[in-house]
Image 1 (cartoon, rainbow, N blue to C red):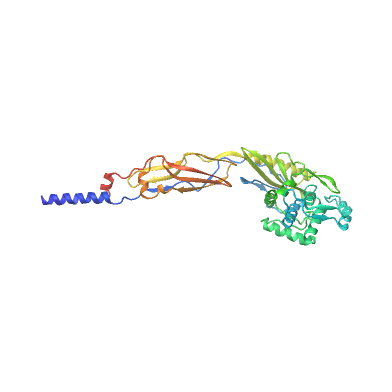
Image 2 (image 1 turned 135 degrees about the vertical axis):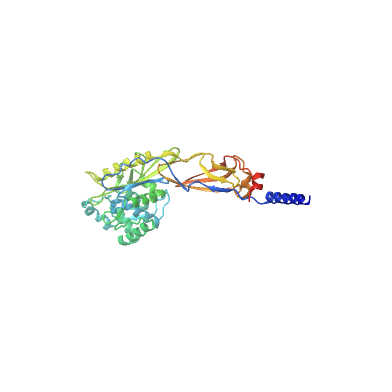
Length: 399
């Protein structure tokens, strides 16, 4: 009898210990990859057969290029950096004219000789006064080499001193393969790459004064009168700038920006064509740019980068209970095929510790943040089924 009592006591103790013992925790494992590539393949871009080009959809995708890192003469594209240095030293806000530059007798007297060299010029007279804004307009619209040199001397005291500033500005902007030898771009030693020029275009278009100037088809100057923009495609295909350039060593150059509204978003394509050839190299560069702009916008599409029902977390327990937590809504972005989105999972406290034993079906346990360039979205992650605690038979049968 005593033995039975002992056995009963021991059995009760065993059951009590087994029931009271902590069970091994269930484990939640993130199974979502850190990156996902938008499906599809980009259509071929109409890159020019000769020369160099580079294109990006600002804030969306770099579309690549051809010979984009080959250093080439910039011609009058150089004046974009001239303009940035001028505005850095003498800032303007939209609507302001800025200080006045007076044409010197020497600068006026140089005009006939410069004209004979087939430079890109505007007529000037000794004593003529140009505001800083008018000087910018003269440099960027009719691409006046003589005004670029005037600006350089007025700002820095000499052309070499101003060129030093230009190179410092290029370095500060990380235009690593750009080197300037003059303010106008007439010197073939003022060089850069198509990739650098796309970076430069972004800086220029971020400046409200320059953005306004490069979008002007014409301007009236004191002595020259009405002068016209060499950017003959301005206003077509959404093109809103930026700067042309053409010399015999450089061929035809065009740094461009185009803006269109696509699926409710204002998007800007930035690009550069350097070294275009043909009977009229500048016309070739402008034509190449139009083709690239249209092709770039055509790449855009609404792409689902994270479908609804994507498995994010697996929950597994030693006693066999399990569930999967998945996204509940899709994430779609206006982008181009092949772009990489970064995924990050933020688990909620409910997914930690003993609470895992009581997860209900449809319970939110985490969120996923999807980042694609400047675009982002966060979606909830919920369980597909409940996770029940361990049964009595499991508790008694475990070692």
